[in-house]
Length: 395
Image (cartoon, rainbow, N blue to C red; front, side, top):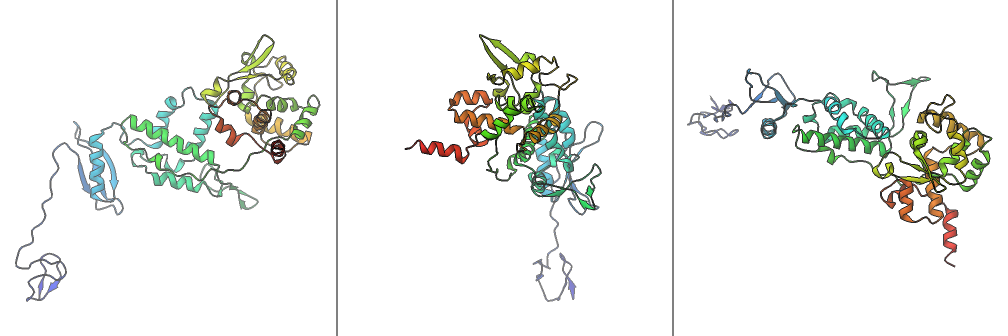
């Protein structure tokens, strides 16, 4: 018996070739020559102490002889590709984390943006907490997609330590996240990837491949004519009924409404109008004439002399949360009207303008949008009663 020169398996002395590896036993085994990398081009090597991703790609040594680790990889080819990637796009921010990149991008990316948009992006970034300390160069679509998928199902609410919060012995569950909130995560990651590409940190935008759930097509409700009449009758009798009525006649978002001040109001030739807004360029430049029915409400609140027109008793501005919970919902309950969100006043405004036959260009100007399709899809609520009136016109 003999031993195969290549695979070390026992062979019969009469065998000229190994039946397992095919090595000719009459010839010596020649080891394949490993091509050595050129000097100052970096290195790829294998760490025997690592079971997963043992292949390491490292940058060329600097003047002091030290080098940076580009990353750890499953195969030698992946490590070589990463090194070649680095050679084409060298960067001083090789190991920057997602958190560090976000902190660097924030002052630039959020400059001149509305507080509402800033809050949306901050909330979106908080959902990416498991990836905050990951190297940005190593992030891939699958890691971000995993977080987005997990947010689409009911999940336990966690405290700051990452432990489930319980109530009466049962975990407090969070509902599936809305499409708009998930969309904010994708948009934010797209902006971060774009910033990283501009700074030669990466050369591919993996946010492009993120998949969001299908956008829900459910119709969002607005106040009916009867409910609006109840709100009108409650003005002067129920606190803040006048605010709700005013919002239904201006279509302002709650933040826009609470930010109104004396500089927002202009009167000329007997016409009173509100100028400005938030969120989009079209919204920031919008003009909303004040309807004669709600002009007395505006005048009464302006006479309070607060920092904002619709202010607290101490003349300081309301926060959106405080106004929503303590004023808006409390007033609806006392009036005896359904508990719709403040945004329902905006949909009420849009629906009534549509029913009145307002021209398309006037419609989008008053809503602060750039095109009519946004209003058709999200704001105009066509009830069966209203549509039936249109059908009857056919006769």
